Image (cartoon, rainbow, N blue to C red; front, side, top):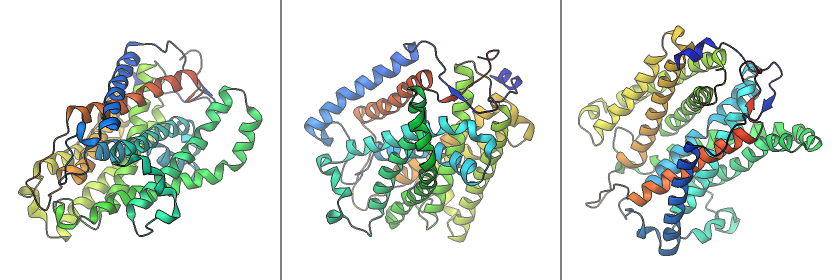
Amino acid sequence: MTSLASHDTAPSAHHDHAPVGGRLITVPFLIALAFVAIAGFILVQRFAHGIGAVSNLSDGYPWGIWVAIDVVIGSAFGCAGYVMALLVYILNRGEYHAMVRPAVMASLFGYGLAGAAVLVDLGRYWNFYHMMMPSYAQPNSVMLEVGLCVATYTIVLILEFAPAFLERFGMHDARRKLSKILFFFIALGVLLPTMHQSSLGTMMVILGHKLSPLWQTQMLPVFFLTTAVLMGFAIVVWESVLSALGFRRPMETAELARLSGLMVYAGLAFVVLRFVDLAVRGQLGAMFGAHGTVMFWVETLLMIGGIAAILPVASRRRGKALFVSSSLFLAGGIVYRLNVYIVGLIPAVGPWTYFPSLSEILITVGIFSLEVVLYLVFVKKLPVMHAVSTKHG
């Protein structure tokens, strides 16, 4: 992997895109497809017999990994398109333009499948459309805002990714017409994640003393938005390094080196703010004895490890350091969100305990496996990745 750093090449000057090509049916593809099939079989039982037939959810833990991982963490994975649109179209950093389309595709998968996962967790899933009806709306509900934002953003992502389909099928006139109005949806695509990612934190502020003092703070919206930005950058770097390795493509070394610098700033901001917040609230002692102490340190050390791996500027041009750092940042963001939604939860009455059932785990694995299947289909058949010269292809 380190040798990839020697390919200090860039996308074509015009940022053209082209399918990667190659065989679609491979061993990784078939393994992922098998997990999708297993999840599909369990989902039939869930919708036929109810949530209780396949999950360990209870009155004490009404939300399990389907919400914490598939939705809260999955949507953070989907912030790749958010941060790249912010960089390229709002901050006018055109040098990252070639990385926008793969990022938007990752966002589309993350948000689309997060929306599907919500249906798995809904007890009365057949009433899901009530959210869209004003007569049922509770305008003071944070959950309503999150639901509407996620649904709208998924539609925005479909439109942002539509040019890849239009180019693939030669619909150039439609492509030109869409380009004329795309700026409006790109602006929405920056606004909506800012709203609902911070609101995912706001929802847990409402829990009050039911959440461990290590995580219960008025700063939760800020921390959720910070981790969304951090995980958005990290998934772009992680996916770019892996695709360069897997498809034997040149790594976008110069762009990734600059992005990794932004990851360091976001990671530092998160860690420093976490300790400042604990100090201001008088909860520094909670780091050594409150509910969830061990997981607090796991989360913190993962973040610090991500920063340390690429703190020397020279390391940001090495594939191995970029992969390790982005992996640690992703793991840190995952653990933080898992801590807030499950680990740090203290049910008011009980005793209640929660550990996901095998069926819950297999459904979550199946949902992420579906993302892998779709990723392989899209990058091999659609113009998603930037075109490279034949000597590297």
